[in-house]
Length: 269
View 1 (spheres, helix red, strand yellow):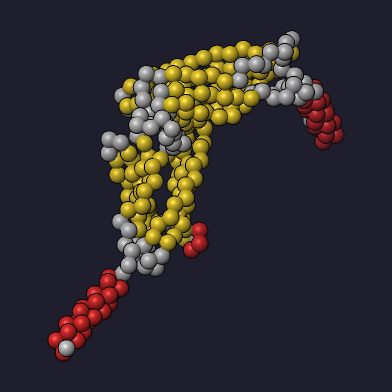
View 2 (view 1 turned 90 degrees about the horizontal axis):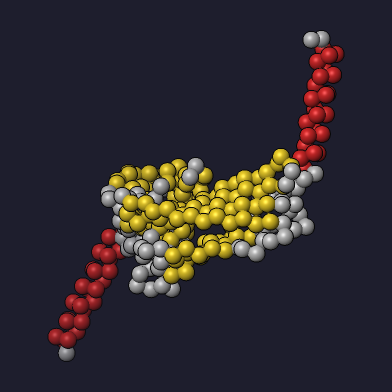
C-alpha cells in the first residue's frame, strides 16, 4: 500500500469511527446508581438507588440485580438476592430491605444493572459492590460504618508510637496498599511487621523521633480489592505521646525536695 493510499485509508477509518460515535451517542442511555446502604437495626439492611432523570435517560427497560453475601464467620457464607425490572414509564421502586437471621454481621452488597433500548442493539451494564454492616446487638442505634479495617494506636511512648491496621480476615478482600502519615510533619510511618491471628491480619507501622507530650493527627489510607474493584478508606485519629522519663525524674526530684523542705520547716517550729 502506497503512502497516498494509506493516508486515504486512515482518513476513512477516522471518519467511520467519528460516525459510529455520533450514532451511539445520539441514543443516550444510563443506569441507576446506588445511593446508600442503611442499617435498619441489628438484622436488616435497606439498599437505596436512584434512576437518571427521564429528560436524559432514554432507557426503555432497566433490570436491577442485587446480591448480598453475608459474612458472620470465615467458614459460612449465605447469599441473598433480588431482581427488579423497570420501564421508562415506571421507575417507582427505588429501595429494598432485606432481613437476616444473624446479628451484627458483615455484608458485601453488589448492585448490578442492565439498561437497554427496545429494538436498539445498545446497552449499559454495570456492577458496584460495597461493604455493609448491621447495627450492634446491644444497641440498635449504634450502627457503625462498614470498614475493612480497625485502626488502633499502641505502644505509645514519649518519642514514638505504633499504628496497627487490623484487616478483618472474615471479609473477601485483598489488601492492596496502606499509607500511614502525620501530615503536619510530612512524615510517613515505617512499616514494622505483619501478624495474623484468627480475627485479623495486623499491619504495624511506627513513628519515631517525636516530641514528648505532643498530640499528632495521624491519617491512615488503605486500598483493597473487593470483587475486583479497587476501594479506598481513609481514617484520621489523634495520638498524644507520653511524658519523657527525664520529665518524670525532674518532677520526682522536685516533689522529694518539697517534702524535705516541709519536714524541715515543721521541725524548726
